[in-house]
Length: 183
Image (cartoon, rainbow, N blue to C red; front, top):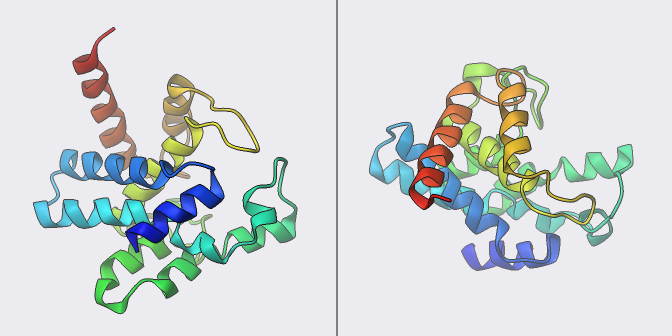
C-alpha cells in the first residue's frame, strides 16, 4: 500500500513527495496533541495513504491545469470512498480516517457532511496536514502560496474548514521547527 501511495504521487503531482510529507506532518501533529505512540505511527501511515483513492480518478482530472468542472469535482470527491474501499479491512481505523479526511467542522465537507466531534481527530489531523502541504507546493493548476499565506489560510478557516486543535498543533510544530532550523 505504501508503494502504491508513492506511485500515485508520481501520477498525480509528478513527485513521490506529497504523501510522505503529509505523513510526516501528521506524525508531528499527533505527537504535539499527545496521542499515544502506537496511534502516532498509525496516523503517520494514514497520512501516507490518505489519497490512495485517487487511483480511481481519471488522469485528465488529476492533471488538469485549470479549474475543475462540477462533474470533475464530483469525480474527485469520490477519492476518500475509493481509498477506504481499497484499504484492507484489518486497518479499519486508518480506513475510517482516510474516508473522513475531507469532512469539515462546519459540516460542509465530504463524503458524508460530518461536522465537529463526529469527525475522528485523526481525520482532522489529515485534513490540516494535506491542506498545508498542498498550499505550499506547486501544482499543475496553481503555484505554491508559500508558508506564510498557507498558515494565514489555516487560521482563517479554523472552525469552519479545519479543526482548531489540529491547526494549532501544526502551526506550533512549524514554529518550533523553524526556530530550530534558524535563518
